[in-house]
Length: 200
Image (cartoon, rainbow, N blue to C red):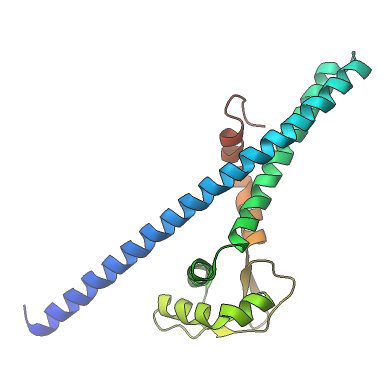
């Protein structure tokens, strides 16, 4: 093995180690966020279910003939409200990440969803001003020579970003990503929140 091959192998090993470390870090962060969201959802669930139980008691007294059907509807509505709160809470937790973690998350999100690597990245105005350029630098590094640029701030964005290339936008806002994952994850979220019952 000549010197160039040794250097090439060393670079490859270092890159693989860095990729593995980043993937491990990302998984740990995702696990922590999910754990935090579950704790928050548990608190919200307890409050909503307590209110729901009081409403159900009053409802039984008024409508004896429709008791079972109405109770089921109320419980389903309460459970759906808890699930709604869980997803909203997840978005809020993501939006509240400290700068270092937000920069890392946004740069990985951009690198994952960039189609050409030369898109304009649109962030919320405060994010753009505070750490927008850091996000661009890290995302370009992750793309290994990307040429992403920082676009104007968009006050409609609460968290996440939009990747713009010409007339084509890729919506990577936290709200949109959560909406896209909701149908896939709602069942799992319901199982976590309501383990004693089947689904919703």
